[in-house]
Image (tube, rainbow, N blue to C red; front, top):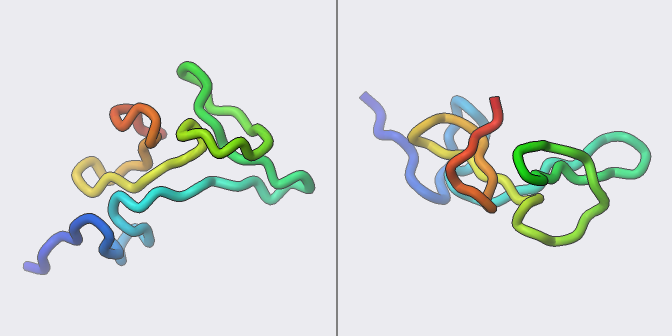
Length: 74
């Protein structure tokens, strides 16, 4: 059985690096960033806040907000 990737390693099945922060950027003309505001996800202009940073959680196999670290996209 292959070992699961750890922080910084690529999860080849999902195509994400484990716990490496990234941004979700819209392909629409203004290239807005996905942002977590309260419990809502919206598109906003880039602001550099942690609410716009996301990471792949190896344990739950979900995308989580850097800001909360406990809420996943579903």
